[in-house]
Length: 104
Image (cartoon, rainbow, N blue to C red; front, top):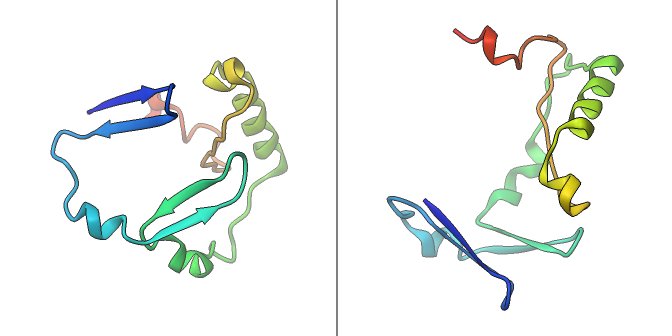
């Protein structure tokens, strides 16, 4: 895989090892999104977004949320260099769940 950026024309090219089957069909539908600089989502990803539900018993402890935000803030990322980049995270109340030393 390779990623090439052409800063002169503000374009990015992503090449995968095996290509993408049915690329034309997958990118036929295009949804313009809002936010910082606007974006585009290709495909039918947005069709089912209203049907996504967390389990009714899903909870996240406040202390876990604060710890997660602190970890993201302190993590040396491109955000610190650029000052503006989107991010996301998955969280659990199990404090060691993300520790790679616990994986079997």
